Length: 511
Image (cartoon, rainbow, N blue to C red; front, top):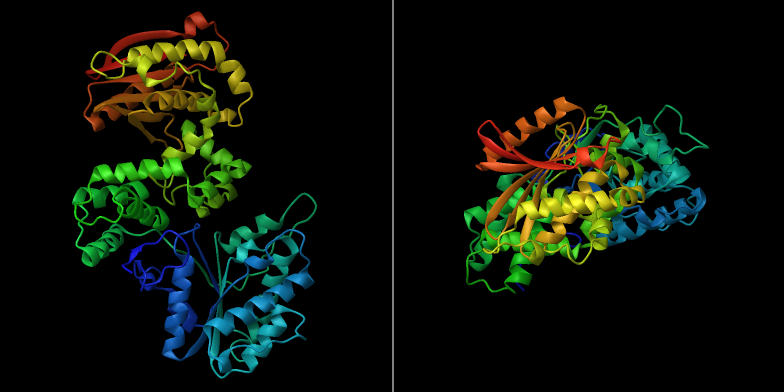
């Protein structure tokens, strides 16, 4: 069987194209040598588990340590008691060790151990080598169970390495600093202290670099002889921004689904865009789990601020921002924006789907094409004005994402029209005060900027912003759509007029 791009589960070098996982976190082995307890966190399907198994295998082969990877996910449900959780987790450790370790290095099945701490003490005390324990899915544990396990690890810490694991590595979606927020509700609190204050460091497993993405794609070329064009490789990196699952998913969609494993031709940028569109429409588990987070209030507030371009009180320690960053939804860098162009497209589309599904049948491309089969954007904008006047108040009043409803309604309207033969790319970031859309249809590009009116000064600023956007795109004209949330008469709010700003033709559409 030839190798392939993996999109499900652990990557195996004999079966999958893969970036060398051990090069992704170079600091870990030094922390282990120094007998530290620390955390590794990264969004789902970022390669955490692949990294853990590769490192454990390396440590075991070197012979100095007994390294074990164990998942605590089985005890991650609400109704479990601390006593039952200890029983389940001891069994998880035993079973993982029986699969990964030599019999003489594995812990015994101990029916008398009352806690994970007791079990680890007995195991460490029976071994000559120091134990390195990687606990995956630690943040699957909830409430009292999570607190109990963290405290047990802290209590055993002083006995390392002779009578407790020399290093314990907690691995999950979030840094341990966020665990307090997870167990706190209206009735109880962990207090101000952390039950894992022995942590020496917190490491983020970052996305693939551009070099790593190219290296991954070139493995397929060496295996099959099939080339990715330079522009195709660049497009894969830009669309996924190095996110490991998205990178593999795009490549796999091209090779396995679009080309059906026909290796005779070169992979082109057009194939990459087709793969992107198919992934967005298909919404695999990775994308669905991402979308599911939009229901959470902490995620919703940040996402809506990005879509609106609103300013928020920014603090790198702000729980909401930290949480959404740790989930991988938004960038790790400033300004705060969606983590990659695929997320920037699918998140607003999903948020606006109820709008789009409810639009009349007449809102479709055939009703807005001119004689050259190009979109008649003036007709589109005038139709939206009419629709907005008739429906906005009642529709937005029932909408879940009210803070960004105006922008999402416009996006839904445009998306419905271009679905049959075009696409929309979106540029959004916290604090920029607008959304920039690029509508592509039948080879033509149209720039559209969405803006909430906050006084006349905001309109002047919007003209400058659109002018700059047009410069970047190399376009001579664009549309500035201005939503006026005030209570004025529709006759004053609705207008369609052309103006010139910085030698650019700006069509202003009032709403």
